[in-house]
Length: 402
Length: 229
Image 1 (cartoon, helix red, strand yellow):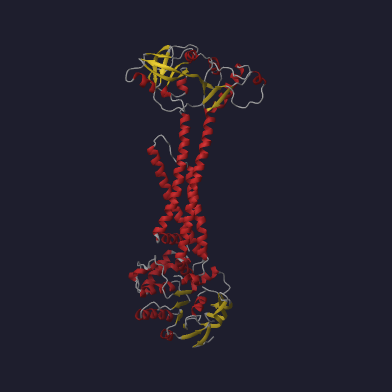
Image 2 (image 1 turned 180 degrees about the vertical axis):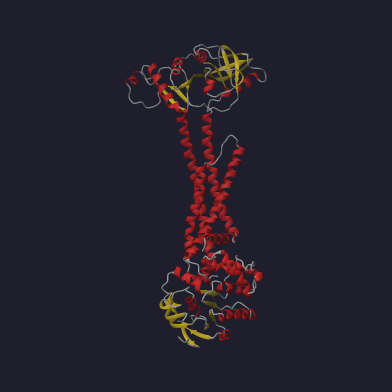
């Protein structure tokens, strides 16, 4: 029998029993759709986290005081266990590294901000003018911290959008004097509302020059130094050079931790990809169930059409012809189900994106291919047994069942 | 050379502990173009004989030569090919595929044999005309009368131009008048040279054949004429 005839015969056989066909197509569709939707959710979560990290700034190398990695035994560690302070001068020294474009020292603390009788507790970040470029922040009103000597604590403040709203309401904020802790500072700018920033929401912080913050909190050490490399490819070099400079300045002791954004990102990426695969795997179980259903449907089809199979044999059909026809039918059921399910899944993902616009729920390509592939494979695999049974029927007995 | 030559055919069915000899020591030769009626009570082995002649069943012992070729030793695939090209079946209950139209049912053997679509449609059209089914091509079996169904079945049986037609009670499900029509049709085909073998327990129908074989308990009791070699 020609392939095109086999296909047409199988299609007619499938459409000849609409309810049974529809049910097995539906089962397969649900299986594929759940793979598509669940992996879209998993991958959406991964993308969401990656996006959040990217909003931190690009080509970032972060310096933390203290050593968190395992460095083996070092005689210096045996003598001093408290790490050396990470100072503003350290940050300035990092600028000498050839692969570094900018460095932004940061110190943080909490204090009270007070204006016109309104008081609230805020997170105070001491920073420099470089911070706005390193973090890709934007200014809504006024200007950011002035570009002067890092060791000079000019009494100015830049406030987050939410802080401005709470303290000033609709009144103008720029130019006003506010009290922060026991100091009076002038508001010179308001940050644009962004809402994101991995735990440090820039809407609810205020920023002052780093020297001022250190004076307020009576400390010499920095919380972080954000280092921006000259480009994506020089991130590793910037990291190495930063580490080398700080080691030299700290008497050869490696008492800081330098992490790259890429490393953090890669970890999250790996974690969430694994999660997506796990979720996809769970969804694939429903595909196996659908495959078994297709097998059942085909077994019923063989039982129902025993007489027809006998007739086909009498008319000269070989076992192979009959086996192919039934395999084709099983393949058609699963293919149709897979395609319907694929579009159902896309629809589901689109609905999720519509409901949560910030959540990029797109199914990953590998999941779509794996889902469709598994659907077809299980359909065919579970179609083999019924088809072989049909092909092996004894024609005389089969004909008597007509 | 006879068309069909059976020698020492035995067919035994096992029902529990007992063995039933459906065919026992059967020798038979049928020439090309003969019109043979196989008669006998039910259980006499006539249906088993027909299945055997149609290569749907295999004998336990003995040989079956079809057109001089030993077909008992062929593989199932080779036997399917012989059925496709040399044998046409007509059944008591028509055995049409319910979801296919009359034309598609007639074309079924050609489709199974892998004939090109163009040749199929021209042959189907010819067959529809020959069997008076011009206006029924697109009808499904449940939209056809019994006589029309059996005509579709006969058209299907002859579409591959087989050497022989095996008919199992072809008028069993028809009234007298349509049965007569169907018999005329089959006899007409026989006159054009197709070997016709009919299984029936109807004495009147059997008497129309040129040669009668009477079966009883798996043995050939009576043969109205032994063919000249």
